[in-house]
Length: 141
Image (cartoon, rainbow, N blue to C red; front, top):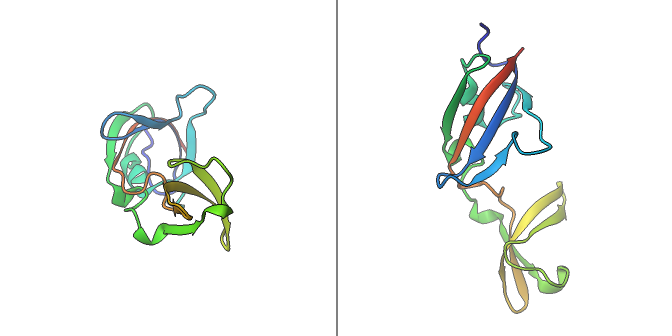
């Protein structure tokens, strides 16, 4: 039976959750398809890819991915403050907004609303979080 290696194209079902069991993503959600990716090309987070190594078709397992092998630690340099007038009315803490900068579009999270300014966080929403994935290999090419 073919094992997953660097260069394999794999198709998997997965459910990603936090340590408290809250699910943040799953290929099993209604309307979703299994995930297909070629390993070794940076398409998947390192810990997910490493967890797939040597698995075979039909095999299932749970992998724990530390933040350092997922989306990294929270980078304090990714927080910034802008004038409140630059944002639409009704913005609330926790909202995700699209931002345009020299690198193109990105998503930022509103973390604090002050009298004159708003603090935004451009870190990936899963930065600083250890993740758990239940994975099942469906296909290996």
